[in-house]
Amino acid sequence: MDIQEGKQKFIESWGKMASDWGINRTMAQVHALLLIAPEPLTADEVMEGLSISRGNANMNLRALMDWGLVHKQLKSGERKEFFYAEKDMWTVVRQIMVQRKKKELEPMLKVLDEVANVEANCPESESFCQVVKDIRMLSHKANQTLDTLIKADSHWFSNIFLRMVR
Amino acid sequence: MDIQEGKQKFIESWGKMASDWGINRTMAQVHALLLIAPEPLTADEVMEGLSISRGNANMNLRALMDWGLVHKQLKSGERKEFFYAEKDMWTVVRQIMVQRKKKELEPMLKVLDEVANVEANCPESESFCQVVKDIRMLSHKANQTLDTLIKADSHWFSNIFLRMVR
DNA sequence: CACTGTTTTCAATTTTTTTTGAAAACAAAT
DNA sequence: ATTTGTTTTCAAAAAAAATTGAAAACAGTG
Image (cartoon, rainbow over all chains, first blue to last red; front, side, top):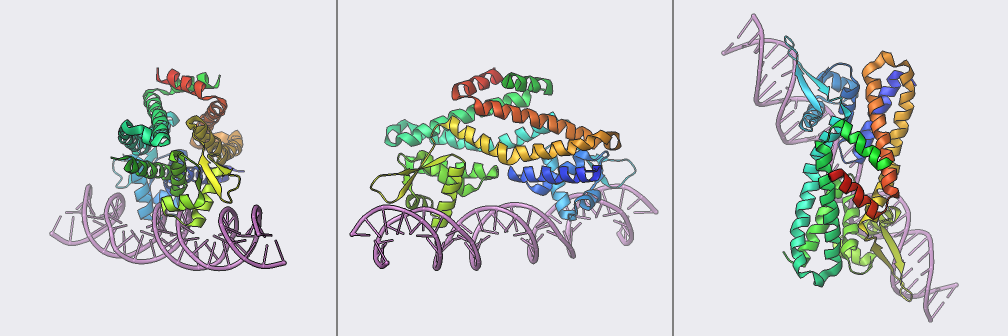
């Protein structure tokens, strides 16, 4: 396998994994392309590199910026915009946690909390209340854990892992 | 909100969260329905309860059994099959980790390891090699952590959380 | 202001994923 | 071996998600 093949494989694989996790495949491929690019790229280079349309490239670049995974760079003199990916992987992981927590975990927690108010008249529906209670507890724990991880720095994060694995 | 509304909301919300995470929404709704059911349900009750077709119900029940989240029960005398969900939430989480690790993390790791063999001639493509190296390390750590969590029992798991959050 | 290179938008199209439902397969009971 | 109640399969249909591309908007420049 040469470098070119390797890059190709990496981009594909990153896209595949993302789509398994409910993230637009192309968005992840744009991300991968920028991650391994030695220099910031223009929208045209992204279109070219992945054989996608201008609209698609633009939308996914914007989405990546919303996620805080990609940034825009303006080169003085140049009219074009350049894009580069955040390369610190701990920051990447953190941003993903921030976004998914906000968009997915928190709405679920809200519903669970609302539903838990029904629990007052619980005996009527034993198993429902028990399940809600358990999931609610687990989700709140997960939420706390995420908060902690998000605040943690990379070094601290490694420690956590070590402690768990030991 | 009454119990009935509460159940409805829970099923919807569980389905929404699942589809955000790349899991078939209906599969999660079937799961939710069985989770809160006080007794095992037949395929017909699932169809009825979620207004879905027989084929759909059957496929998603099977998928849930493959994931180890739902089990089949045969009642002696009865011709029909009954289905019930695993209700221990730690087991549910564990099974989900097992499956997703196998289907998603491991293939990605395999690709990263292959791609990493290119690293020998790395200086050619500095940023690519660096990114692969970082992601590879992080993924291997995540993999180890999952292995540990999967082996852990519920009590141990709570401890981990406490240690992290503290 | 008019020109030019660029980004953004979004309705229409394409692709992917999910769902349906009827036919086939299966299995218990007679 | 046939009937009966049930589950499974899978091609076709429907629904959802992603993508295109051309027009509009935008922003420097002369």
